[in-house]
Image 1 (spheres, helix red, strand yellow):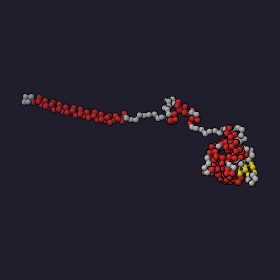
Image 2 (cartoon, rainbow, N blue to C red):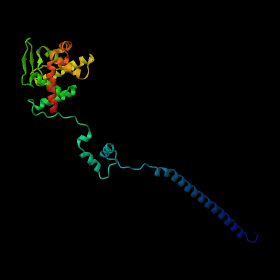
Image 3 (cartoon, one colour):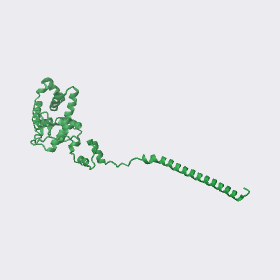
Image 4 (cartoon, rainbow, N blue to C red):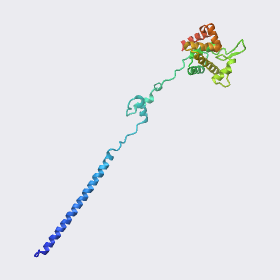
Length: 254
């Protein structure tokens, strides 16, 4: 070193610079590796969020939902199933109430017959039986007034007796009752028949025998019906026989 002091000093400086450069490179590489590792970690954390995001599905048309429910099939893309549902007949969407059979030869307006039909179904009474009783009582409204020997008066298509009018109006829940009003008369008669049916059911009667007691009770009252049955036998009652004959004729038309 004595002969080449400057050369030795230069070598020392070069060695020092190389050491510093190597350290700088190592630190730079280390920083870059840390940055890559950080990005890899960040990508790893974000990756599930990207691939597990919910799929964007189109909303199902409400008409198609109804079609699938009612037909148990998947609707086609063209919407033909929905169109078929719209064009389906009303009968396919639920049972319809039976219509009243036509009775063109009766001297009663269709509106009144429709009312009698509806009330018979509501009350559980036979439509043909109610017609048969109206035929026997007033010849279907042709003879609406009858004066009895005891002074009472029978009025209307169902010949409601004046002595029972207020009581029956209460049963039928009719205010300002008019026995000459055909609709009132029908409601009054049905109210009594339901009352008689309930009474005789409690006595253990059923079926045709129960109905026979109802019919005779309409003509004679509850007590009169019991007396007649005990004395003559219910099936021998002339009123009952005529009503049943009328009912058979109506049944043939229905």
